[in-house]
Image (cartoon, rainbow, N blue to C red; front, side, top):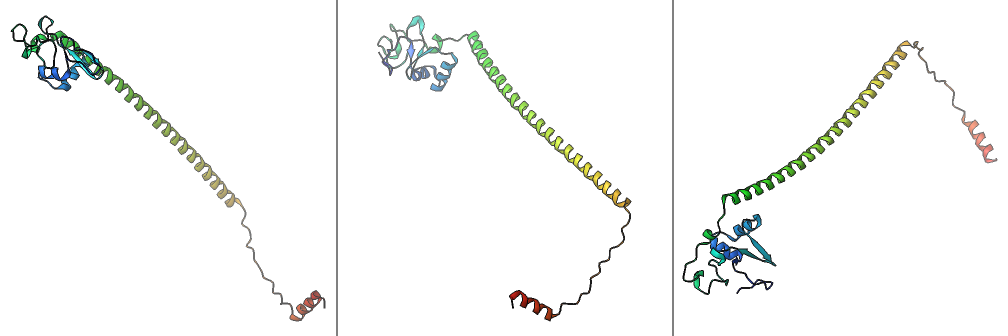
Length: 195
């Protein structure tokens, strides 16, 4: 009898993923997907999956690598040829419908959660844009208020200038003073020097 990586012994009707893939004529990836969706019953033992595929009357159908095939090649029991796995493992339309409903419900829940997240992000972005527009409007209003004040001040200054009497022109006359004589300067320098 075969043993798994952890030493667990194979039970009748249990197969490895490669064995099930060969028996069903599908890829190992497809077998793993069916295990994940619950379409195939399986137990995990360390890194090894043991897929349960009961044959007629609980006898293991076909397969390689041990199992209780009666020691005969091809998995025949009492000289009878084994039935194909598909015949022993029948899936009813109701089971298929349940799997489809479970999968659909999961996708709908995932899409609803994703839609809610996108909606929250969109609302946050709209709120940020609204705050930026409000700040811009306040800035524009402040600039307009200051411009109106400046224009009023300008108009007031113009009015005062127009109302003020005209001042007479101021004449600037330069006095003609003769330059100081050089002799005077020499005397001053001598006194300052102490001589």
